[in-house]
Length: 254
Image (tube, rainbow, N blue to C red; front, side, top):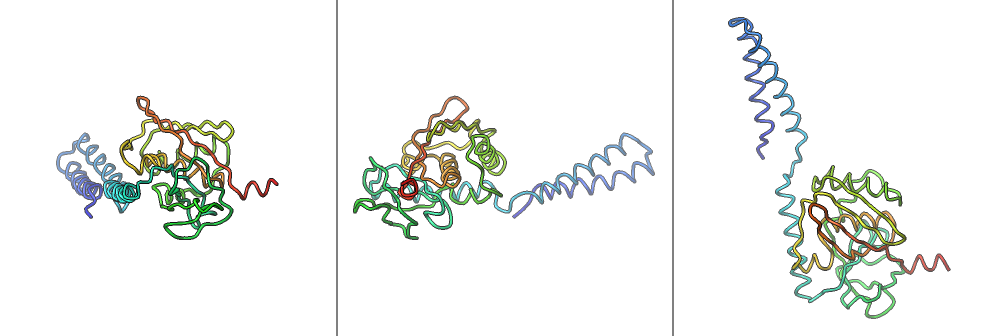
């Protein structure tokens, strides 16, 4: 793949290195010598940017994400699933946080008593109706980009989301988090990833940004997380989430 930063940097270096001795020996022009030095500096910066550029371009990453969401959307539409997806931590799903979409209307949350099987269709509770499909979401792998799991405070969660959404993915300019009991509101400032309201996958799992937020919260709290609502206000996206309890936690309390 062509790297335009490297090509530009190499060109600037060649021009700058050739310009400095020529202007010094022949023209004795200080402004032109300064120009040559500036070109060398700019060339070195462009070469550094070229090396730091990811091997997979943002366009390819976006294409892969959209393809995965479209496939998931087709699956949910074919099964006529309109249930809200529940984001689960890795100790329940095995390996990484995923989401389970109940096959029946989830007016109540199924009490998960232990790790689930590594299958598409899994039993997620004690009732025969507690069956759902377990899927990998846009947030499943991104959580692993963090060096360490954040704490449970709003400041630590906000810092972790800022690292992912602002630093790593560059899809927002800031993140604010407020916590009240088991309710969490996340304000993603200048979010550059929109959502398709008519998409079955978005209606069930939320937008890609909401998926990242819910996956991180599930992994941080070690509890299931539900995306309750998303609201767009001017240049900010507000995501309301709820932390759910599970059967294992109730047994520990008893």
